[in-house]
Length: 179
Image 1 (cartoon, rainbow, N blue to C red):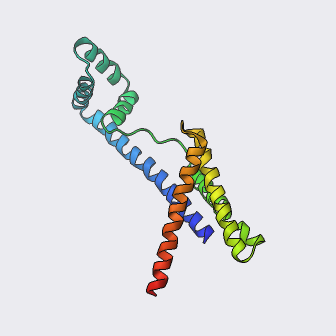
Image 2 (tube, helix red, strand yellow):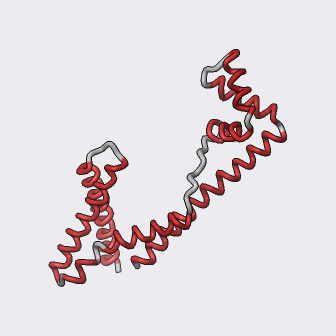
């Protein structure tokens, strides 16, 4: 189940990245087509965007000239300002999928490891403790990407994981009562 769930997560990651990249490329190709088929209409769109940002007169005309003087910059400007799309990172969807799979299997193995050492009621306690520590540690590592404190992020992840476990347990109890 751990490997199947890891594969599912990796596949979802792969497809998400590929879809984002494909969508961006499709929209970018449409912008290139519009700029080549009707450059005056596209210039009018750039003018309207710049005017909406408060540019007027000679400043607006000069910015319009500069933006539309280099086609790639013009396309990039339209992608970001008109469509609100940013170029997806040039990451390998396959590499990202493998990293997701590996991280999922490693993190998902933590709750299983105590079962190899402990038996009975002790194993349930040890699994719960190992899972809680893993959730807290993973949450704490998020501090690298956040301005929040490590302990706040650790407890946040622990609470989210605890809620997920509680829901899973509750659904299991409800199904057992029905069946």
